[in-house]
Each structure stands twice: as structure tokens, then as C-alpha cells.
Length: 291
Image (cartoon, rainbow, N blue to C red; front, side, top):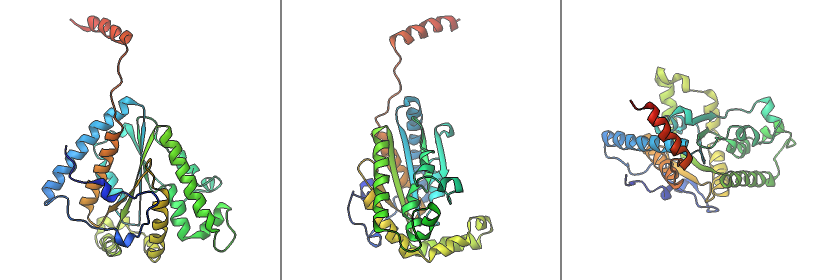
């Protein structure tokens, strides 16, 4: 299937300066109608399903997809729609909320490292270890729970050291057969307001609403600055970041699914080849089964 989306338009180049105000939260619609959107997404899902079966059978590599974004950016919806055709046996989704007491007793990468995907499987992180250079940077008082900072502002080197730890981890995973793709779902403040109101006004969406989301909205600029520092510092050739326009959910899902498809294709997967000895065994078994 020919690509009509160029993922390179959304890729963060390593070390490049990122100003999120210059990155669009909405682009020209990929599809001109809902019918075309559903057809293209279905085609993506069908190919993803076939490639995932091949990935599971080959059992050589793992795929890790990381989703980050501000509240209501559509992380859950993107995961649910794009991965709807994936066999649950070959995929696991983890959502990382506030760290537990046990997790706070370890280094900041520990709790997510325990959830990394096995060979042949897809791991999806809905939020991740990047929270430790995003939420914690906006709220440095959280470092007190980790025993790493006295009251007041943390040392400037702390964030650079964490970026380095993340890049080193992802390079290690890449060398050992885990492909990593990272998505920042880029939402405008106006669209977030619209989605929050929908959660308040529509009864079947009330469960999604959280007072904490409104509280965090007050730190909008601080979060953008944290992302602007983090994305170029941790986007590498081995583990790139993609800034995906998220105001239009349909376009967001199509862009994400195209990027995941491309990641699978780059793995150059193949079904395991049977040895001559095993083929002889098959021939013998076939004779026993044939009438």
C-alpha cells in the first residue's frame, strides 16, 4: 500500500531546536471524508495485524511504542483505534500513573524497565519514564519523594543527567533488538478546553473528567517548555520522537498508524525457516495423517 502520509514531516531531528508554537496541532485533512478515513484506517489495521503475526512468529525483535501528551490529547483513543486489529497475545499496554511507595525506592527507570516487551511482542507505554523529565520538571517538589533534592529548585544538571540515562537505556535496548518509537500528541489549549467541556457536558464521558486535569492546565506553558527541552535531547536515530498534530483525532490516528507500519516494515521480518531434519519429520507425520 502506497503511503499518503510522510512521517518525516513529524519527526524530531536529534539536537534540533524545538519550539512547539511553530509545530502545528492541526494539518490539512489526510482524508476528504469520514468514509475515506475509515477505509484507510481499516487498511492500516489490516496490514498491522498481518505484520504483527509475522513479528510474533519470527520472535527476534521487540517493538516499544511510547505515547506522551498533555491531558485529553487522545493517547487512549489513538492506542485503542490503531491497535484494534492486534492479537492480544502479542501485545501489552501499560499506563503509568503516580509512582507507588515501592517504585519510589528505586531509580526513576526501574518501574518501566520491568514492563519492557519480550522478543516477538509489542509493548505500549501510555505515559512512561518520560514523566520523570516532564511532570517532575514542572513539579520539582516531587523529587523530595525520591530522596534526590532538598527543598527549592533542583540542580540544572539533574535534567541533563536524566536525559543521558534515557538515551543510554534506549541505545542499549536498540542494540539488543528492541525498536522504539515515541509519539508526542500535540494538542492546542483551545482543543483541550473543548474536550474538557465535552467530558463535563456528556454523561457518558463524565468518568473521564478529573479535577487534577484542570489543576495541571494552569501549568500549560511550563509543560510546553519541558517538552521543548526533552524532545530534541532524547530523539535519536535509534529511538525517534514524532510530534503528531492531535487536534483532529482522525488525522492523529492515521499518522500514528502510518508511523507504526513503517517501523514494522523496517524490521525486515520473515517467518522462521524449518531445518532439513524438521522437514523430514513433517514428511513422516504427513504420511501418518493422510488417509
